[in-house]
Amino acid sequence: MAGLLLRRFIRIQPRAPMSAAGGAAPFYASCPSSPRTVAHLEVRGEQAAAEVELSKKSCIPCNSKDLHAMSEDSAKKSLEQVTGWELKNEGDILKLHRAWKVKNFVKGLEFFQLVAAVAEEEGHHPDLHLVSWNNVKIDVWTHSVRGLTDNDFILAAKINELKLEGLLSKKKATSQE
Image (cartoon, rainbow, N blue to C red; front, side, top):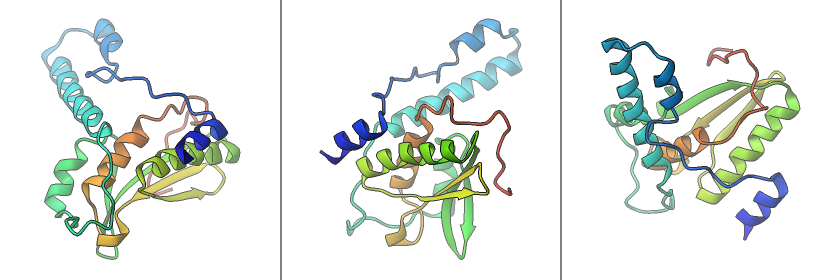
């Protein structure tokens, strides 16, 4: 019920299914046929397919006794499935981190509303930061295990699927900003 109310409040559209190639087909059409380019696109297609698979999963409750923080090696392997995210070690706690630059302060708040709806639906809540007036940063980690779990990668994949047209600035954000 809460998910339905949130969708009505912030007018989230139902998620459109992504193609296994991550929508790269038009790019293939305009791309010169070179082995390097094709190999790169095939790898990106596999990553996009893995991310779509991950985004179809649901987070498990964090109070589960079977939930444990993953090793850094496992996290690095899982990181390949969530485009744009990076690992951050903060006080011996491994976190997923990503930054975006939005058009303005209000667009940053709209961005957070979209993320909040997904987080509520999954029962897994990231740390949201609006720095300065247009830098959005998100840290995802499982507080109860003081590290990363599959839940974090699932949530990151779902955040990656959000429709952000009209919110993001043309300038690219960096993690150090």
